[in-house]
Image (cartoon, rainbow, N blue to C red; front, top):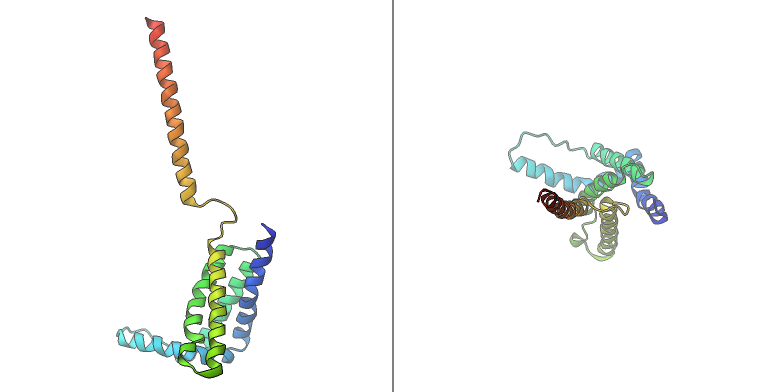
Amino acid sequence: MTISRRLARPLLATSFIVGGSLAISKPQIFSGDVRPLKKKVAAQVQEADVDVPVPDDATQDVRIWGAVHVVGGLMLATDRAPRLASTVLAASMVPTIAGTHRFWEKDGEERVRDAVHFAKDTSILGGLLIAALDKEGRPSMSYRAGKAVKDARREAKHLGVHAGQEVRAQKNKLS
């Protein structure tokens, strides 16, 4: 592993470990941010006429979100399935970004503060996407498959030329 990966992954994971730990231990801090998004989801479920209960309490949701962040952050920081961890963390960021810093609905200093946090969260999402796609210098499956096809064609051509020479040599022996 390169030094940049050895440093970057734990740095990227830090906010998830700290934020997730806080969400598990003090979910009330984040519950207010989750309620508006939860109400929208509940309204859509009710509108779809699906018999799925959506609990009103956001505390459990916040704790689950926190656990996902702690586990994903630890996996990323310790290089245990970093692509999977980055993918899960990126997926968990989408509702966070959409529901938490809705700067377009606010005015004044609160709008500016939420816009900055929105930009930071989208930047972290970009870093997670890069980490999720990072193959640590190894070529992609499509590249390796294309190279295998190219090598097989070259070998088949070589074998064909060699077989033709062998046939001509045997023919000359018989004549």
